[in-house]
Amino acid sequence: MIYQDTIDYLYSRLPMFSRIGAAAIKKDLDNTIAICDFLGKPQHKFKTIHVAGTNGKGSTSHMLASIFQEAGYKTGLYTSPHLYDFRERIKVNGQMCSKDFVVSFTNRVKPLIEKIEPSFFEITVGMAFEYFAQEKCDIAIIETGLGGRLDSTNIISPELSIITNIGWDHMALLGNTLSEIANEKAGIIKADTPVVISEVIGETKLVFDQKALSLNAPIYYAEDYLIFKSFQNNWTTSLFEFSQPLIHFLDAPVFQKNFTVESDLPGKYQRKNLKGVLVAVQLLSTMGWKLTAAKVFKALANVKKNTGLMGRWECIQNSPRVILDVAHNEHGMQALLEQLATLYYQQLHIITGMVRDKDVDAVLKLLPKNAKYYFTQSHIPRALPANELAEKGASLGLKGIVYENVNEALAEANMHANHNDLILVIGSVFLVAEVNRGYHPF
Image (cartoon, rainbow, N blue to C red; front, side, top):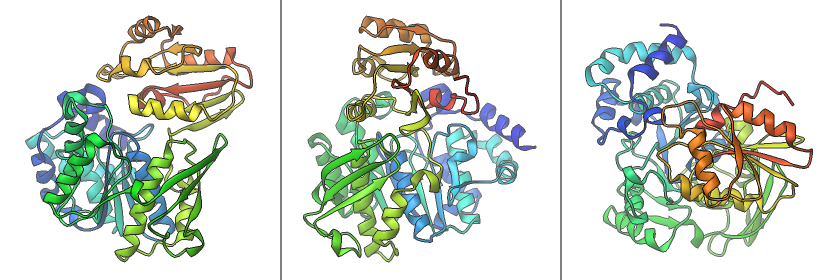
């Protein structure tokens, strides 16, 4: 098979959550174990860090990958979903895996696919582990897909685990209370292995404490070690000031009380992810990883450059300004609106499309009524039809017009916006993925 034939086979043969939803989920780790056993247990041939959470796990994973790359380690990165190219899921030192590898791997496991009928995600996890083993990675940052306890990535024995936060998402699969959702995410905590909690609330702290205690896992709440002090930003970079009452950071005593981190992930909400990352880095440095303050700060200022991260407060045009962000649930949208409040613009134009299995009403209720709306949809089976989204929006005071696709909506927004306006594309990873970056009718 050539590469495109291979991708078509994977998409058509394997159940894919991003396209069909819960029907693609396998509620055990049996297939992933079988795949990795078939491959010779590649997940044990390199070191790992495991990252879970409702929001922020992608940004956190990319920050960590950038840090290890800057420190000179050969670094794997597994994330999902992808935006434009399947191979975005599997990178080494910021470079996507080769097309030849995807083809050869698929040909190798095809008999097993026909035998055990795994999901798309189960196969891509096995593919990532095999690639990182073949590439002889020093370490790989592994982002969970959904949940943690039964997530296909949860067959690794990491150096450290990070749980970014707990919020309302995938309730039908993870539970109807924050405690139940936290219990699923806490499934990545391993015996005698440190875990960092980037953000915690009272309802979830007891869950994490009990799980960590039962496994003798040292647990570190980032808020106990770093205090957020101030924030400055423009449209593409931010400065985050922290104080550290209990630790001094790595090898930089000048930062013993206060220090500032520059980030090319400019959302104010990144302060929470940064806390978790910085505490994790401090711990990892005590475990033998050679991570200096200078390398860490350089890495955090160059996350996008080092890893190719897209879709997190990403500016693709300056006049009028166009921002893409994959915020798609209540927690993520609150964080995005917090960022908006720090910036100046005239009229706000919001292009949005969502998937039907999210709590759409909860997200729409947060959105500002004084924006101009362009309702559309991504072209996947899970997408909520744009006319239904527009009806829901109208019932909540959000007025706008329906468009066939995101690029048509973007062209229309550009036509009506002046140079001081702001155009946001939000609501679904899959909507952002359909923005045609090579086409600029404006």
